Image (cartoon, rainbow, N blue to C red):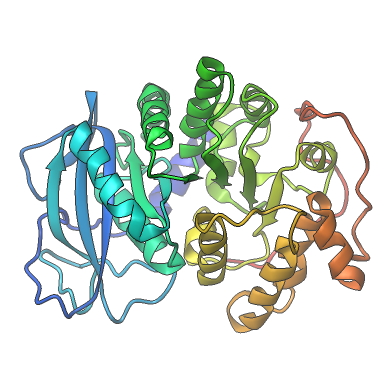
Length: 421
């Protein structure tokens, strides 16, 4: 155990790079012509600070705070990236910068949702970040995702108290749990708005824990998850697979459509597994192996395997946001209300075509590797891809509950060769 902890500390030290400047939340005066403005509605359980360049710290608050923040995305922006300022104030012609901050109370926040919803096809997309995120990390990342996906949905960020330090994992974990009631309340409020017809949820890393807990609580309190919460995207979930099974089953029979983004080379989830001393993390499973394959298919959970995709992230933990193709396609599909199931053309077909078209970015094999696991849980894709999926083991029938996961690991079947990042 001491050896494992020493490895984690050493690895963390290697990964920590130059820290970003403080004060990124302080609005920068612009002419309005330097970049595109992304307005974000923010709900947070973080403690407020009088420092207008920080706004909210990593400590916990007894109440939920609300605000609207406008972020300017520079004209030189590359999809999948955040052009961070190297010092403050940033240059809006080259960097992401904050241009406006407006605090709200709960009623004003919901009124702003009602105001913006008609311009966004009456849809809302809620993003819940992962661990090791400062407030500005969460805000700028969701601004990037919203901008790059071009999704027609009101962007709502739920940010919980993370200290933004790699070694603050235990504190962040408890803070995520601390925030589940607040997220449940936010989702219930959004789904209760008459002018909102659909709510999509996108969670990353440890944010999946608080998301699944909030959805489970909603189902328990109200008999089911509100029908307006139609699509739930679980990106690199830092959740024990056995715990995730019980959380999803706790939502009852009428659950939202769930899409799972996984990557077996996710180093952050590897570290998390060591720290937790538990079974595999949900975001690092191989969906082509049992017991996952049959369980995912039986529960109609769509899977996108990003293992073969290269990432600029040393931990391979943020692929879903850093791949322009994935963000643009997945964000647009889900936020526009299109189902990711077999009722329409298979997701694997579309994603395969997108990835193939960007072979220089993600590699020629990516279209097959990314689409293949989807075929396991999406019969439409399996039929359409034909010869490209001959190497896959045919799907088998199983029970309607997610199968319990063995602690021995993810099986011994041959694995695909992974590119080095």
